[in-house]
Length: 165
Image 1 (tube, one colour):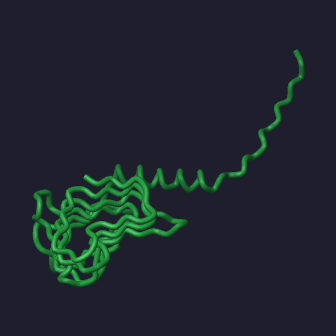
Image 2 (cartoon, one colour):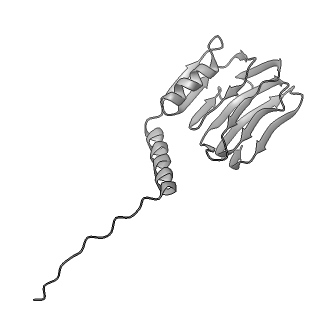
Image 3 (spheres, rainbow, N blue to C red):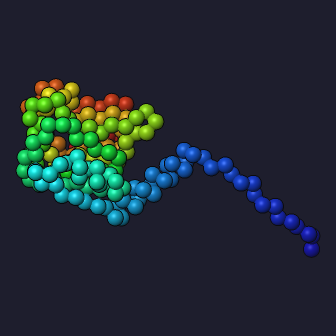
């Protein structure tokens, strides 16, 4: 029998882009199996609940069927869903004629992925757009109604794979 010696394969240099994609896929997979949810009533801060959900790795911020009077921007980060109550117009975010909006914004090097806004009536925003998306991917806007806003309803800039239902 011939004497065969096996040589170890050379170590591959990890590809940072593939590594980051794998990490994000694992994060998404973990979120779908263990989704966390917070419910916010109209006297509580929506942004505080969003921030807490983000700090826990993502999840859902549920708004009750009521009117939420807001006078500052609401920023939805990666992996967070802002969801009202299902029937049309049951959950209202009233920006009270301020230049405030719901924003989902990333950067050129770090797009925001997999966020959504669902089942909400947005009104009385004087911002450039009531919903403002910039540097985002795989964003879902589902059952959104926008009324009494003075400028654009939705503005989408430098984004891809936006699902509007």
